[in-house]
Length: 254
Image 1 (cartoon, helix red, strand yellow):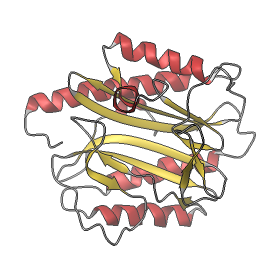
Image 2 (image 1 turned 90 degrees about the vertical axis):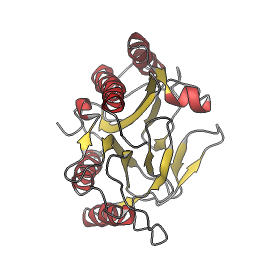
Image 3 (image 1 turned 135 degrees about the horizontal axis):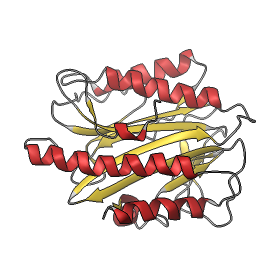
Image 4 (image 1 turned 30 degrees about the vertical axis):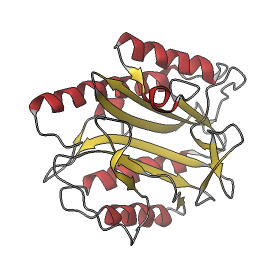
């Protein structure tokens, strides 16, 4: 969407605060021994308390309120009573929701407890690259140039990017134009970021794979060559200068 009224900015800030707070609280609640379903139920209660609706549930009838992916799961992991969180797990939580007709999206990967399996470098790379990418977005900048920046920064750190997972426009629905904000230089994409537009910017930084493939459950995605992936995501408003980071409350850069 494009922000044209003060009321629209207020609406986007409100829903963005909700998803950001939910993500932050879910990260704080996560601990070894609980199931991913318990973690999802915790997030679901927060959204409900704010009067917000789970975006993946509303839009796709996703079998959960939030997406919780663990270790080799790259994204869209289904919350389950059979998945018990362990010390050192690489966990990704993606929270998106609708409130009063406005939609917002954010996500974060993190290591649970001690970094027993050496995932922290990947997590840090994803966070730092997202920050650099967002700091370079303003009206008129080519979307493909930001993709090039993300891929270049990933390669500098010895990582790859996932080419079939992208950021996207958002605001009045979960996925809007621009439909693909890729993590690489897509030479066929000549579109530019537009001032006042609302977009969800996501990093998809991986150790081994360059594509994500869907498992038999119809939702969970893993790497085509295995390995691990870290994702971080903010919903922003594009301006002529530094973007307005609507989901800043999630504290993923702290």
